[in-house]
Image (cartoon, rainbow, N blue to C red; front, side, top):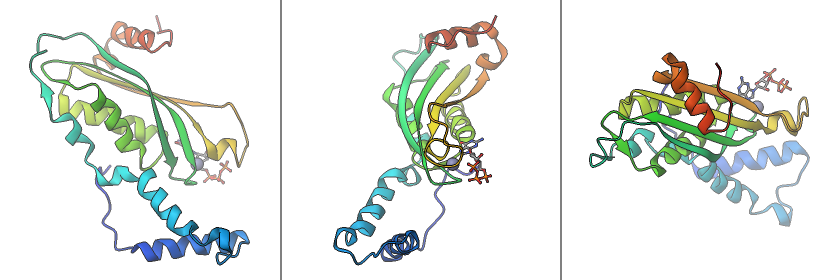
Amino acid sequence: MSDHAHPTDVTREQAEEAVRVLLRWSGEDPAREGLLDTPKRVVKAYRDWFSGYQVDPGEYLRRTFEEVAGYDEMVVLRDIEFESHCEHHMAPIIGRAHVGYLPTNRVVGISKLARVVDAYARRFQVQEKLTAQIAQCIQENLQPAGVAVVIDASHECMTTRGVHKRGVSMVTSQMLGAFRDDARTRAEFLQFIGIRGGR
Ligand SMILES: Nc1nc2c(ncn2[C@@H]2O[C@H](COP(=O)(O)OP(=O)(O)OP(=O)(O)O)[C@@H](O)[C@H]2O)c(=O)[nH]1
Ligand SMILES: [Zn+2]
């Protein structure tokens, strides 16, 4: 699974034209006054929603704090809200991520964990891949004793179209190292994020 953006040779004008084609295909007249600036706005919105392709998520974790090197207990950042888009329908995925790790000697600024979540969320995703990418990025860059990522999200391709099931959320988790091997560590993390752990 590649973390890097696929090089593009598509111009902004071509992207705007693609939006006009979709408008026509929907039954609209792209020359209608209210829609004249829409292709420009949509292309700009894409730059925002898919800005994750412009960054290297691992870069956020390269600056670590040595001063807290003695701290080796669990660090958990919970309820990280994110917006993503599913790669099947290009429909929004709205949810929360909970990230935990067990530092060995590298501790990062806590906002960087949220930045890693956003860097992967702002791409075309499936939730399982998003969950695994966040965990692997932290594992590779901080080499902690373990990483845990739980994501709880709702998929608009299921709520606003298709099966039309509102209120359904998908929960995925990726546990690495101690979180995978040690039931007590995993249970402590799940308790921190408000999910009752297993026995
Ligand atoms: N596992 C997984 N499935 C997803 C995710 N996002 C969307 N999907 C599912 O991807 C599947 C795509 O199925 P298809 O049958 O190819 O597409 P479709 O005909 O639009 O399917 P429906 O959504 O059932 O109408 C659907 O079941 C979606 O619910 C995700 O993050 N993870
Ligand atoms: Zn979808």
